[in-house]
Length: 277
Image (cartoon, rainbow, N blue to C red; front, side):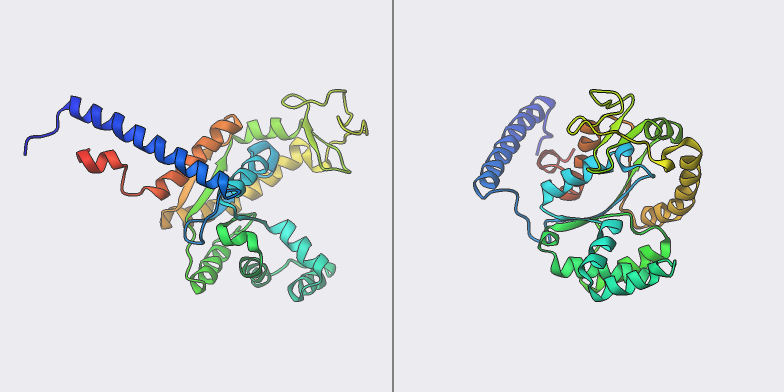
């Protein structure tokens, strides 16, 4: 059989692009008609989202809801999860509160137990999950893998939002917060309409005490010391991906979509299968 020429490849590429666009259009229509994106557990996402202190500055606060909406999955931020379990007075929550009241650190077993409980009981987790703030150590990563293996599941992605420490410090030290609502602003990147006042209520904005440069630099040192071994662990398992978080939020989202697309099409595009290129 004669090899396919460049003109034929171009024609095939145009045809495949049109077909893929048409398929996407039909999928979007189906999803819209059914009231949103629906995924089975196998089609969902199972991932860890890592990033340095200051979720707003690296974009975790923006990207996690985007991922959650795309996959109809749950966002498990360990701090929020812990507070929720304590408030609900679940057995794990009562155990955690007892430890915290004594000034201790909540054990890995309790946190893993809380994650497992969410995966089993939270309907949002049927479409998968985003873990935010856990694991922080290799031991925690290994215990998480073991718990998921018991459920016959594996992590698909460990995404690290990366940003230069100096840039992060400049972003965070300009952050302003409205204490009552949690709304955040930035002196340079997202200033309030009126200096030091919340746009909605007009109430005063404050700068968090741990948002000063010296405190942040210490937190960054701790973060890098903790995260480096965890990144190494996931690099060895082949699921780690670093994304430049200094980009515009829309570009960061495109990078994330690229990670998910590679998962969906590990064997290459339809065109590459046709042409062998």
